[in-house]
Amino acid sequence: VVSDFDADAAPMPNKAFAHAIDRGAMVEIAPRARAAWQREQHGATLFVTGRAWACSTRLAHRIASRRPFALGEFARSPTDRDVLRALAGCGIIRLQRNRKPKR
Image (cartoon, rainbow, N blue to C red; front, side, top):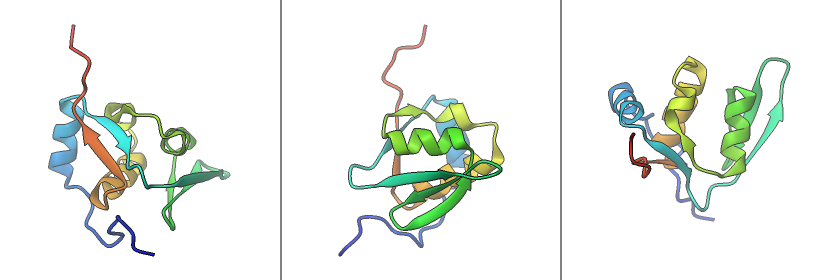
């Protein structure tokens, strides 16, 4: 089976990630990515395309739900930021411009 994802890819650079947060980027899960999660004593383990990451239960639930969400929702948690940077780096998530007009 050939994967569309590069598990060895470097995480998205911090500067690019911060810029994406500032511009209100939305997170979309790649169509072929599959995710599941398990609640842990402190947070959750997120399983995506054969890999596991420790993160908040909130992030794990959002990724597994496959619904787009605002990247900024997870800007305050260093752990969740690292997971999102890793997922973006290997192509599991895509950061899209927020299509809603600002008021």
